Length: 198
Ligand SMILES: [Zn+2]
Image 1 (tube, rainbow, N blue to C red):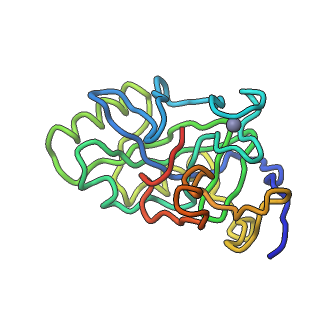
Image 2 (cartoon, rainbow, N blue to C red; image 1 turned 180 degrees about the horizontal axis):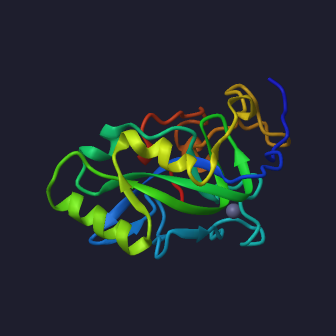
């Protein structure tokens, strides 16, 4: 294994990412934190690390707004009553991992419509209207994201066998606390809901 630069190179345009949220009534929340998205745009702050709360994402910490490089599987949200997929753009400080990114700033571009036509669909449309973002099908997520940002070049993604300098920890989107709970093995999530994020 080899050590790699921890920070992403300067990115001129916002980076497109994909993630999930949880609906609590008609409000939108991060999956594993108390953060409520009151508007489409969010600036991350750290509540757990011993560093400047505004220095996000920080080395060796799990803070930041998480997103994957590609859309979460449609079934990861569609079959649940409260999970919502979507597309965001990320900017500011962005840390690249093998399976995703964590960033200082994010803005929702679009929320994913569920397959059903019941109450959840109506709620997603209402939330999207309130936030001023689009409600689109799973298939349209990449296209909507491309209107406001650019996908990260595949060549810039860290390889799964790269480790973080100083810590020797594998670079992965799963926070360290979760990794330790799993016996220190890198856990590559198959569903977005496995992550603890903002
Ligand atoms: Zn932190």
